[in-house]
Length: 464
Image (cartoon, rainbow, N blue to C red):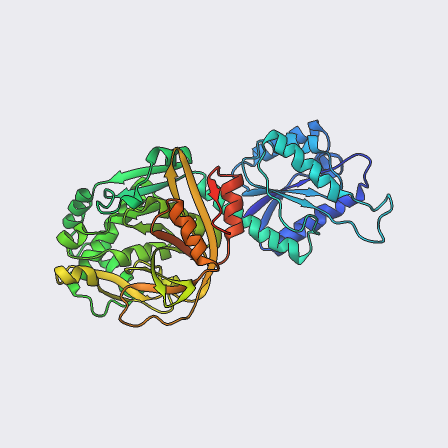
């Protein structure tokens, strides 16, 4: 990732502090593993921005590098002039991190005192007046070469990934909403207003394309090898492996042709009835490959899965709020049939036949990637479309290594979430669905920052 560096100035403050800040910030960004662009030192006085004219010059420079940077770091080495900052950044179009230098005891004389602690409020105040979105983090003032600022940088990079990745993207809706689940209704126009384009495909077309594929088609053969390497296909009949491979190839063709960033798939019961397979493992593999995929045509889950993946740089999973775990009020079994990404599982999965479909129609359910979810710190989220808004929640917990008996089919894990019972009431009263989406890592603050301040979603709290 790459950041554009901005340095503020104010005429009567010590100029040498700005030169030091330019050196510090370059070192901080590169030491953290990121790249940067920085306006030439000779372009303005001290290589910083104070006046409106200098701000316009910086804005023009930023425009000339449009598309090259993921966010802007607004560095305040001193109490900077907010007018130049506004002129420079009001059209930046990316997240802006406010960083202000701390003063040091013993260096509070006129030649060394910075007053950035106070000046940061002037900048944030005026940015609020101009409705320019920005990011502030703890601590209020922080030296660029401190461990605290390195954490700020990593969190800001995650905010940038989420904001830039969620501003505009395309979800493929493969099949109609599952008839039995009104819980996964969605408003396509509301999604479009939030930059989410929806492309819809009928299952009958997918079935036709699948049946047109020859067993020895080179793409089908290659896909079969990929799937066999991905997880344990040992007990799967050969004809089922080939059918799953054909479906995967066709889904890939939709993704490539329509430039899909995510998909939601109608996974039952037509595939089991007519193609005689269950596509769970294909959803698992897509998520591990970096393409968000949700089941049961849960388009809202696809939104939050993509956000979680952008924040954590890993796969997300769509899971049911499925079972209590004994008498522990803060533990719950989160589960789905076998669509969880392998990277989120405790070990390599095993492809089996879906027990629910097997019960009434033997041999029709091959394709669930079964196993257990690994133990890890977890962020969970979901959203709904309602009255022209997308309303979204975020929470944190952890998957534990608590045992689930081997007879429990599918892929599940025990999650511990503090004050779970109160949160469940808020989810129920909030009209949220029986699914939640999860990813490895605690990124609630990052996601709330991105969605509340940059993306314009209605962020609700499920905390007490």
